[in-house]
Length: 62
Image (cartoon, rainbow, N blue to C red; front, side, top):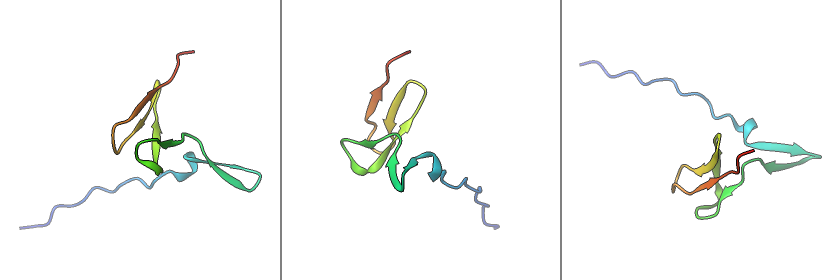
C-alpha cells in the first residue's frame, strides 16, 4: 500500500503581519485579549477574529 502524498502548504506571510517604523516592529492587527500577546487576530473584511479561541471584534462600516 502506497503512502498518501501530503499537499504542499503556503509559507506564512509574516511581512503582512508586522510593520516597520524607524527601526522598530509593530503589529498591524493586534493580539487576542483572551489568549495573550502571542496570538494574532486575523483581519477580515468586516471583523478581526482569533483562530485559536474564536474571539471576534466587529469593525465599523465606512
